[in-house]
Image 1 (cartoon, rainbow, N blue to C red):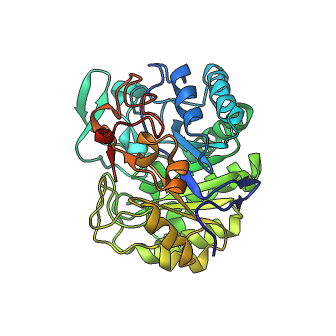
Image 2 (image 1 turned 90 degrees about the vertical axis):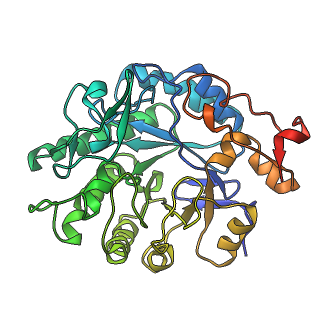
Length: 366
């Protein structure tokens, strides 16, 4: 059986180990969504990951509603990503760009327009803006005639990613974002060809995936889904037939890999009592399957041993432990994440986590 330290083919890429860095929204870009030198240092520090999946990157101003998050729709943004990807490659690493349209999770204070979604719904709670928190707004349903433009934005961002030196892309179809809003039936009340049946609700995911694959190659295209339980108010009353159909569709598209973030009843960030869907989806997706959420080294290896997963992606452990792969290999203790600095704009909690054994004993947790 493979171990976490064995190489793996993910489409066009051969990754040196199966300990992947999960995508994590932070906030160290500029107000104009341009990457910064601090981001190059952060990602380069973590280049020993089998593969880095970048933080979510906006495909358009319409789709990006998170302060100080980076984009990939302008020439300035593309140019600013090049030092980031070069820094990772210079350290021997691989990095792909996660492509993001937030749909109803944007806010007009950030985008200058009413949010768009599958239907006229609103995300529960409040959005972060440059002027503080504001209640989420009711989204405007996208007209059918607007959807080709959304798909074109994904394609443009994917092409920009390759031009910026990324090794591939991941389509963010998870976590209650735009594509997820089309997929699941509590947020999609449409009666046209993008709503109603599972086949119709899958249409946007399939069209975006195929268009991106046609543009940059299916072997450099991946997808992330969150198939079990509610995320940011988005949920489905019968997830198994929906996500097994999604798995089959993505298998037919020949993507490089599929990543599933699955909440558990005792999750540290998101929890759910809805059963994990990966065991039901696995027979329908024959390519590499990456699992995510609250894994440690032991449970990650068990997932590989079972044959369910081909690799595991780690989020917060990679935030606090830039040398996570080495720590796993050596059985070294892990640093704690400093929650208060996750979404600030400073180097603290971003580039200042030390490598082992520079840690003080008081900073480590077994």
